[in-house]
Length: 125
Image 1 (cartoon, rainbow, N blue to C red):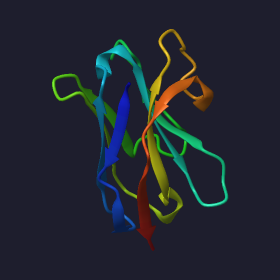
Image 2: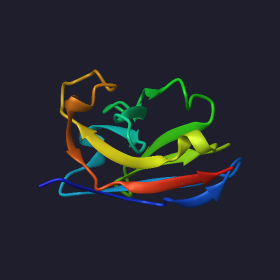
Image 3: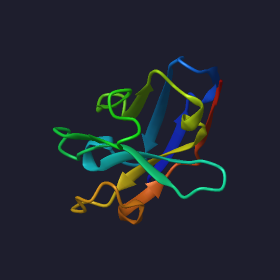
Image 4: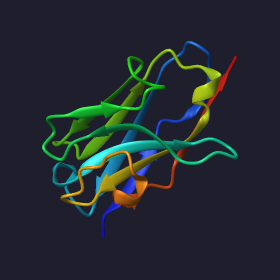
């Protein structure tokens, strides 16, 4: 059974940076398209970033483009999300997901088969 565990969340001030890490066990990260989503209180889950299962493509939501970077480390079996220039609108629980093989729509959360438990990111103004 594939398990995902996120870490690296916390409380920061506007303008700061954070790096989230998703550790994958029970499977190899290179076998899946991986993504990050977030869910703010009272809102729907929102696509943040994704990396293709071939590792060649990265994709970002409009609200984080230019500030966030997703990367995959096959040797460590992890996926990271580097978040720069954080602002209070980035406050949410961040989830890591592994996309079902063959599913190319990285924005649709229903295409993700496995999820982590989430890590809270809070940005104060």
